[in-house]
Image (cartoon, helix red, strand yellow):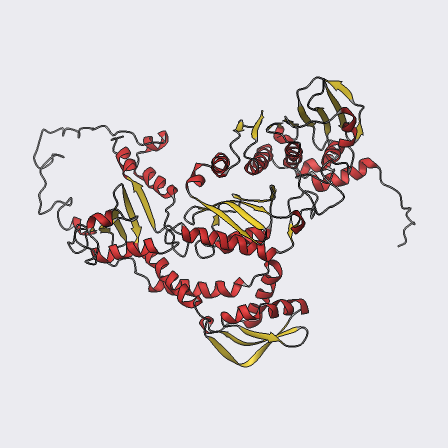
Length: 618
């Protein structure tokens, strides 16, 4: 089949803009992101966003920024016109720089741009409808800029078929505003509309305390109460922000916020770094909550990877990943023991009556007298009859057997013949008082009640001791009878050769075998029988993606975790008072002991004030 020769021709500006809109404007949330970025670049300290119909009917963004004079409005809606970029594409210090957002929006929607610069007597307005630009006309407006977008995708109706429900699009816009608000705490954000509840994020000081208040506004008070401050710097790259303690996690990574020079980004390298930092503390189906800010020289990062500017490429990805992993692990070690406040909240809720849970707090319980028997009072049937100590199940035996106080030794006795009871009470986990159901240690501090899962706690202690012993020296290796030759692309062989010294510390001995092969002579003895080609290829893929070779370390740590699980104190074993107190003291001295190897909390702390509130004393 032959085709007629085609003539090369120049596309019209409208078609060019619509093609660009397909990359830049995916959904209403993309429009909000671009317009809010423009407002922030203009120096706005107050930004108001109004929507209707999930953003498809209306998006209006109003700011109090610098504004634009009338003669610049036609340039603002023209492609590749921007005030934010010099001739050096590597020196990008603003959120927007491509000059594509407004013309792309105007090519698929009805757009109006109204602006008034500081000191001007009046404002000016320009409109773009399906790519057709109107003349500039004078209007009345306050200082700043208002961009109004109506009937999004009316010029490309096929795109409307790919939009989600109004509720989903509204939620996506809210998420965009929250992400931008985290990076700019000194800016006031207001989000209103007929399709949503009003969201107001007041401006806060742009310091550490102010950032934590903004984090509480955006991510909730629970995260602010269960967070660790992160501060680190290495080779000109600085990292700051907050990350959650291991016992405070989520089922997905939606609450992981990353910023590079103030720009919100989504990057697999950064997500993988978070996963690596919490590798020993969270299971694979749980995700930490974090807001991390990376600051570095703009020349060391490429933000011009995608028109939406959500992806970035670092010149030295290994440095950035190592900085994040090291900083978070250091923060976890320095934080000591911390239990998630959500555990105590869930415990309080479990003790409350349904009407109290509905009210959101514990209310004083009123005494209700027992019902009177219809046949008159009888000592045998009365609910207030005296207890018969031989048959009652209250505080008499054998009912009390489930509440073991440690071989009749009270916590007032010396634990390990070293520490006195008052000193124990002042310790973070207090003094052991009892063991319940042969698995839960009940301890008391000066102002709280602590419940410890003895198996989970001891599992973490054994695991940390095993890791320290394993990584303190090179792991034993077993020599293969015949070297295993693994064929692979030459670039993968180069990467493995560059990491050969690191891999040897974990018992994997390899060397180059020609241009496109690796010879494996030793494998870690801990792993036993291993699929050598698959292991080597997995390591090569990981090095290519993140410039690390942690797969082998993860396998070794997994075996250590399994050994710790089987070698720790089992559920169902009764402990003496000195054993329980010794376990509590070890937990206090071990980093990360607030969670077990599988990410479950090892203890829950209930403050005395919360207990008093349950009983209506407060």
